[in-house]
Structure formats: C-alpha cells, structure tokens
Amino acid sequence: MGNAVVLVAPRALSEKDAARYVSLSVTGFRSHAAGALRVVRFGRRKAYLREDLDRWLDHKAGIVTTVPPVNPWDSIL
Image 1 (cartoon, rainbow, N blue to C red):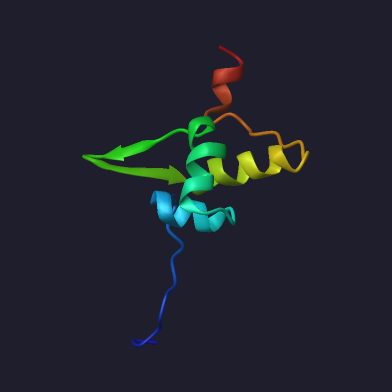
Image 2: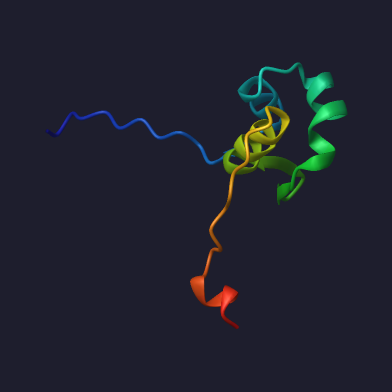
C-alpha cells in the first residue's frame, strides 16, 4: 500500500484545459462559453470550475439540472 497512486481530477481548470474539457478550441471557448462562466482568480491566473463547465454544457444540451443550495439553511432563511 505504500506505493499506491492516487489520481485526482482538478476542480479548477485553466482556460486551455476548460476548453479541452468541453471539446472547444481556446478561441471557441472564449467566444461561446467564457462569458457565461464564473472566473476564479489566483493572482493573474484565471480558472474555471469543473462544476460550472458541466452545468453550462448540460444547459447547451437542453438537460435541466438542479443544483442544491450549498447550505440547506439558505432556502429557509
């Protein structure tokens, strides 16, 4: 067990990786998707959350998704 390899998928993707994730070129990603997505900044670096990319792609495909609130008390208060 000491030599186990753990693969972790990143949650935040660079613009290039986000474009690849949704099967677009970087130029296509900038013109079709980037404006509709939240940007997470790490200094000068921009990243896109994988969950947002999934939601955007589902919307483009006509798949209705519901996202539970982060805090269940938010819907009560």
